[in-house]
Length: 576
Image (tube, rainbow, N blue to C red; front, side, top):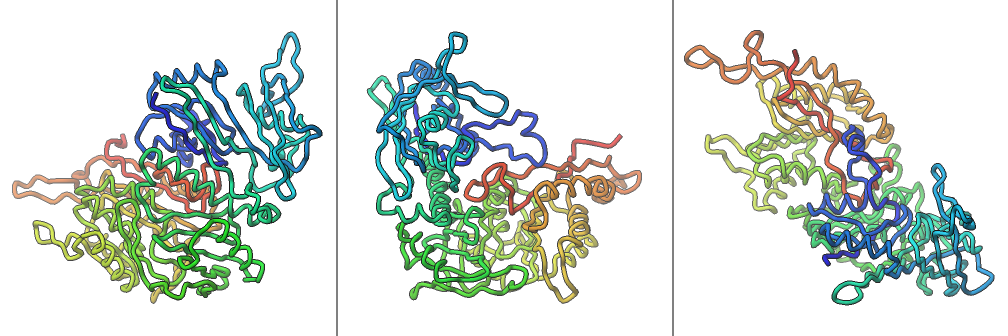
């Protein structure tokens, strides 16, 4: 039996609930189930042997072939598996152990549990054992003999020990549902196969103080969610494609974000103030996680609108270098601690860089607002015929060239016709777009991730007023079949508003785009596309979903900080 015991994080479904039609709609994340995510990352087909509720973390068994999947189904249906869960509750049962049987069924969007009848006999059995006290809470072990949805949660409520964080079933409020599938045993031809998933650090006796702090608990659980994800990816020998860059804490951290950049951990503090209690809880977080203090630096970000340049360091190792290198997938990038509010690479674009690298062989790529050239490096390593990096800052473009060198790419390389394979243009983006249009340039891929606000010598760029014109100028440079990747972190735009405005813009963009002008041949005929009667039929523009993002940032169906979309010139679809 080819089995994998994965470590499912809290907050995701075991399988997607979307139909195939729903997954094709723009604005929908097509990979929103845990098994589907592992399949997308590994390229391997997986069959889950059972399901865990969205909020439940822990061991989940899956098969890599249909015969093993069928065997798993038989084992679970025949009650031949031994499942062990642990949970916390704010309440203590009256007796140290209890056995609960009931009939569980779904009614609307809820699950109900009640004593069985001759018409609806009991179909669920759970044994619950008291294991001890943990700070202000109580620890229990649950052994469900059957596998109905919400079974342990409903039976915990019936026992008088509703699960912490399970407000749907009578539990006290907490940052996460504190129900964990800790062990699963099942018979195989070679003996008993056992899968285990480690408890949260919050369940350790010497970390009881953290349980009393909702904020510290939220931080620890956020990091552990990503640890469970990485353990599951490691089982498929992915190791997140060997990346050394990772976001350990995102929006659930409130004022705190944490990035790993190679051997160093970059803590971002967005709080208005920096108080002694903030420092104390972060110190305790580092201690509980066991991370090396001499590899951690904390940067105050302040109010990004009112204090855009507030970048003071509150924690900085004495021996920390000014720059170092780290790996993303198989790419290498230089990072710096003296470069302002970013250390040199936007980690939330990882999946988009991966997508670009896989698409661009022998294609022409334009990377706007290129910063340190993350997309440019990905395109060059993917075998692009031409990569143009445009950024107003010559300093950042020099950094981009260093990233090229770090990946054994010659920034001065030439094509066989003597043209530059890689170009680095220190110019304002819209000025470059205007120049490129006059030159008749076209690109197969354009990357456009503009800042929300920027000052240039020619004025001020504001995304809320200049975005439409910028997109139009980009679309005008797309070759037939070309794709424009648009992204924005503008906080005033929700994901829904982002897609709505792109849908609104699409008809106008369609009317503006025209094929490249045909160049006459010596015989008087034309090659390529022409103008007027010489123009080919006009392809339509299509709005598409981007590559599904990695889960170290937002989980599926959570509001995303980074909004992305693809506008493609569909060369196979013609107006009539």
